[in-house]
Structures are given as structure tokens and as C-alpha cells.
Image (cartoon, rainbow, N blue to C red; front, side, top):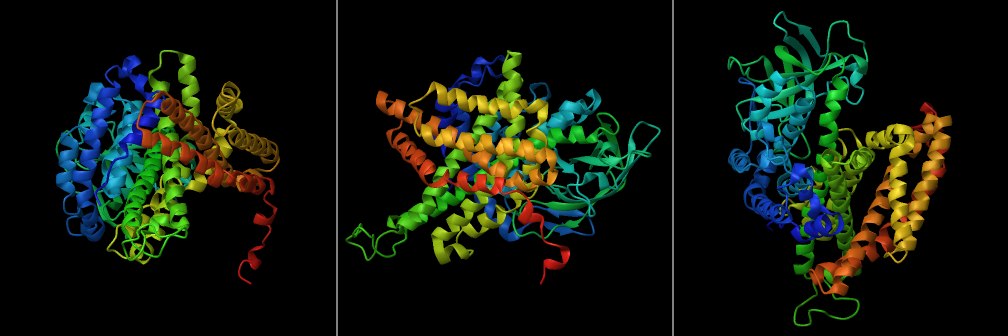
Length: 591
């Protein structure tokens, strides 16, 4: 089936629930009126369905092809033309800085488009996706000379960017990297080393690829405090000469086969320092935090496409009869959507997808407020929410995105397990977002180990203030009691981690993953209550899209009845501590 961008849900959440209809009141986004945003979203829906989705299957079946003799990579059929249309229409520059050719539109709009792109063709979305992160890193930390040299062509999409962190001997523990940067007399550096798993490390969509590379200077500390960030182009902009950074091969992957995941060998390649020496991690985190939000949207995009495919199948596939009596009396059987277990799977997909979308757009609007609101206190409060919930968006949306793709496959039964249907590809593609840009376990440790204590606990304190203000100010809010129970569970879990984790870091580590999930479910409960309240308001006023609004009320009930009760088991998990988890001796694992 052809992908249909969920524009009704997006506009309802963005404009009616989260206040995105007022973004144009901020001077920075004065052009971002609801009419303009709506028009952009309509065009994005057409682009993703008509240009990106048609080459998705070729991306999976053909994959990228590596030529050892030339160290070159050819992308699948249709990708080059799709990329040309994508960049010529300005999609690569949507929220990029105006002074370097970008459109300067809200970051929220970029997140929405990311979802659409990843629904239609996740592999394709990787190429412009990491380029955007490279733009942010160079814009925030690069010298004026580097910005002038690289940003205009990165913003336009004429060049693409990469993020080169991982090496064969290290992934998350970047203090172990061995790539070295030796100063040259002209102020540049020579980089030597090997990076692996580099998304878009080599391909034929553009003539130049700009690598952002973590490396160590001579005499630098042998830890993360000794890492510097360098910009290393495939082709030197000043001379047009080939820089000696070469693709040594492509990874053989279970999914996202249309995305070129490369091994890169830096053979005394010329590079230039970004930011200060030994301060590369801070600069790279600018790129990584943005990438983590993008990866969250990948999870949501996969989940949305899986839902649309499985729903279409369930409406047409005839098997058995309804337990309450035939619904398709003139046919040989009823469509499988009449069966409670099928509806259970579809409802979970639908309700979680809409809740995850609300969470992502909440963070998107906070991100826009954090950079554009004239009041410093408002900017600070918004930034606190972005920092706190970025790991939650990355981890929960990719966990549940993959789970929902699995549910979609289950709806199709045996058909879902065959390559005749797209669900098996969605399951394979949807597995990697839980791993890259920091595994979801790392996201949980970031939340518990860094974010809870950051600024004296101010970030999590602000979240509880938001919850309390809503509960106290709206005693008649839909599902008020269920939300209050979830908030109390999260408060108890936070207190437990604060007390037990300070005494024993392993206790905090053992609780991290269930705590992140508890946080996500509670925030989404708050957003579902708000969505249900707004839906009821519009229904009472005779406004809006009646079927959508009625579905929102049902969706909220399903969330609070069937999904949110998981908070009880999560709190029990957290309180049970580390004992049984850490008790086995090495000799006891295989007995």
C-alpha cells in the first residue's frame, strides 16, 4: 500500500494540544504560520509517498554495492534521483541556519518530516539525517572559516556529512579510540586510523562527504578528556584533490540495506580541528543529541508504516467469524479485524504510535522555545525538558517502534513472515535504531546517571511541576486518577534511585531501564489526558474532525486501561534492587 502521512493526528497534536499554532509569534519563526506549516506537511506527505517509498524495496533487495578497486559505493536504484528531488525541493535545509542558506523553520517541523521520511524509506533518511547533525556541530563549534567553507554546501545537500566515532576495539567507551591526529605546519592535521559502522561513509549521491572524526592529539590524555573533533572532507575544497580517506568495505547487515554503513580508513588524511583541543566530546554531543531525537523518529516512522500495513491487511483478510455473530454475512468469512486479539494488536499500535508522536512533538516544541523564546526563564525551562527527555524519546520510541513492527507482522500471520509483504523488512529495519547513537541501555544510564542529578535535580523537578500543575489545575481532566497514580509511581521510583543509587551505583544501573520506561509511560499518560481533554472540548463545541476526536477519546481509554497499568510492575522491578541480577558467579552462567 502507499504510505499516508498521518496529517490529521499531527495537526491535532501540534496545533490544538501543544500550541504549535503559535510558533509564528516567536520572532525567529515569524514565517511559521499554521497555514505555512500545514502546506509544508502536505507536500512532505506527497514527497515521501510518491518519491521515497517507491525506491524503498530496491534499497532492501539490492543494498549498496562496494567496488574494492575504486573504494567506491553505489546506492540502490532510485536513490540518486530521489536524493536530487529531495535536495532541490529544499527538504535538506528545512530548519538549517538562514545565514548559510537554510530556511530557519522550527525544529518541530523537521522532526515531523523525519517521521514521514523514515516511514517511507528509513535507509534513505539516513543520508540527509546525519548531515543535519554535522551542520549543527560545525555551526555550534566550528571556526568562521570552517563554517563558510562547509556549511553552505552541507545545508543545501550538495555535500553530505558523517559522524565517525566507533572503532573496531571500542564503541561506547570512546576513551579507547586509537585514531591519531598529527599537527601540520599549515595549521591542519594528518589523521590516521580506522572507523567502523559509519553511516553514509561512502556513496554516490554527492561528490563530497564531510566526515566529523574523533581522534587524539599527540600527548593527549588517554581517556575521553583527550579526544578532539576534526572535520575531514573526502575531497579537499581548496584544491579539489582526493583526500586519503577510503572506504575499506561495507558492513553486512540484517536491515537498512540501502544505507551505506562503511569501514573508513584514514591514511594521513588532512583534517581541521573543530572547537578546542581535547574538547571533542562536548562538540560531538551537539551532533549526537540531535541524532538521538532523529533516531527516535525512525522508531516512530517504522511503527507508523507497520500500523498502516497491518490495518489494511486486517480490513481485507477474511478468516473465521466474529464471536458476536457474522459481520460479513454475504461472504465466506469475516475480515480479521473483527477478532478481539487482532484488535488488541492494532489498538496497541495505534495508541502507542499516537502517544509517542505526542511525546516527540512535545520535545520538538520545547526545543523551539529553548532557542527562540524572548524570556530567559522560559528558554531555560524548555531546555531542561529537552535535556531530560531526549534519552527517553530515543529509547522508548525505538523500543516500541520495533515492538509495534513485530505486532504488525503478527497481524499478517504467515503472510507477514514472507518477503511478499513489507512487514518483515520493517521488523529488520526497525531493529537497529534501538542500538545505534548509544544503545537504549546507555540512554537509560544517561537518564539515571546524569540527567536526574543535573543542576541539582532541577530537570526532573520541573517535570513533576508540570504534572502537578496539570493535575491541580484540571481536577476533571480525563483519566485524572490514573495519571495521578502514574505520577506517584514515578516520584517513588525517583526517590528510590536517589537514595539507593547514591549508596550503590549498581542499584541505579539495575533500575535504569525500567525507570526510563516508567518515565515514558507517565509522560505519555499526561499527554493522552491532554489529548482526550482537547478532543472532548472540540466535540462539545461542535468543532474539528469528529471521527478523529472520538477516536482520541477511545484511544485515551485504551491507554489508561491496557497499557499504563504496566507502571506497577516497573515500580516493583525498580524496588527489587540489584540482588538477583548481580548474584551469579562467572562459573554459574552455563551449568
